[in-house]
Length: 138
Image 1 (cartoon, rainbow, N blue to C red):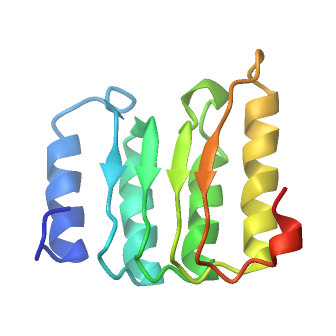
Image 2: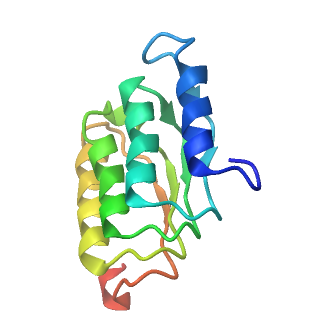
């Protein structure tokens, strides 16, 4: 997402670009939509486009996006049908509005997905600056 570009424009361009490739053919190194305010509907659209084309990424960066719980839960929904070996290895969600409950749900989803793909590899998850109780984070 480029400076000044609106999420709706970005989603339209992404959908068009992905339409040129067969489903499952696109694996990004990095999807960075940070520092742009996203509505839940807009973020759902973004992840829906990726899911619809079976596009995945090594790294998802969505920090300082004002994502609320419903938007973060869309990440778990996006991950659910994804093959475990294609789950992002880095997820950066700092400085959003994620609650403790949503964090726990996301972590549970990630743990289940990664447990299905031995050997287990580390996952980098940044979540500072959210509404998560410190004692929840280990």
